Length: 147
Image 1 (tube, helix red, strand yellow):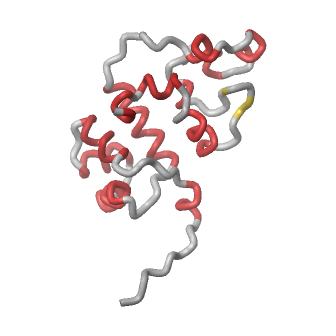
Image 2: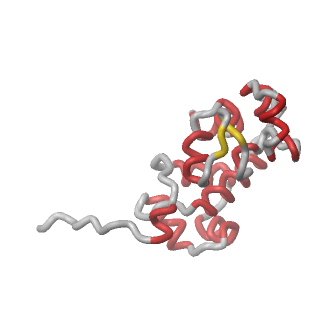
């Protein structure tokens, strides 16, 4: 038997986020959704959801974003983690230029494009999420993912 040939990633696959194995399934289970229900919520096919869960297909940015948004609204929060600008100690000048501050969404900073994290704006969702996944604000929003 010949080994499988790895094909180069194309288009949307290149833009997909590489999430930890099992993370998508963990989110779906926490939301209490079947694969079919999750596909409907995300505007994708059941086959795509199955592929995400098996690790056969990278999760596109819009699917990751929507999944995390739904999870953020399902997990009970008691504001113990505070606003991102407080936790990160952002100077006033940085806050004034940051959309998370402008819209008073310090717990959803990870969801908003154009936020200024660690002094710089990230140019893509992928770069932003790479930084966010290491951040205390993000991790405190999603304890389910960091068990």
